[in-house]
Image: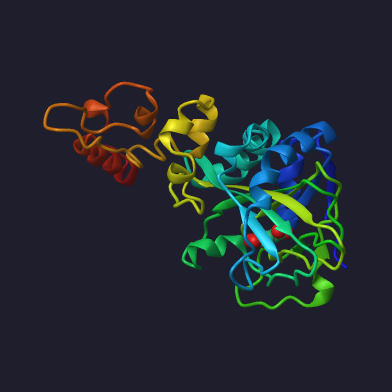
Length: 298
Ligand SMILES: O=C(O)CCC(=O)C(=O)O
Ligand SMILES: [Fe+2]
């Protein structure tokens, strides 16, 4: 069986990146204390217990998936902003974007009797159109211990360059066995899938993933965390979830006011009461100028 490397929570960003780029996945051990895990679990479980099972093989007929974690849990907010994770995500994704953003938050509870999920790449969320771009940095935080028996994530270390239609054999699959509070870090390009739960207990993991600031997010953060909730969050988190431009002109909006009553082109954080009018700073003429500078170097 191939091996998943374990690194301590104190590992440097460079060490994390070295293994992530080589194997496509690794485990960072003991990132959260048991008290921190307990806090998150107590915040999320009421929502998880009220969630229905999945609707198909992929989402899992004995699996629940619960989102909007930024809006629902202060503990999850801290996990999303965890400095070591955000630094690693930035180093991994920044060659392909000016700004990273949150892609999804989801508690995945694999219940007894859930068969294994089909092996896949998470980057297929965008189809197979993206070439020569690394679009996704992923984490699954163990909220219970993860064991092979209770559905620890199946992972194929070293699968980053396999063709999309490759079918891994059993001896190419290992399991992200880890203690509650540890984190599986994996690339959007690694082959993996949820494990089978043959035990009597639930396996609970919190999936938090990041993507390039110019790509569509899998969980629509503007609906899962609308402005009236987002305005109470720390600025760093507001920006991470998407209340910031994804590039010079990406993601601006115009409040739909009556003539003359509101500003025209403003950045998204304007909806949270931050920053004044974009004015000509974000105007189409300037966009053109910026683009031609980038393309032609003029
Ligand atoms: O829950 C897991 O261990 C992995 C689930 C997964 O890979 C997915 O749903 O995309
Ligand atoms: Fe996945």
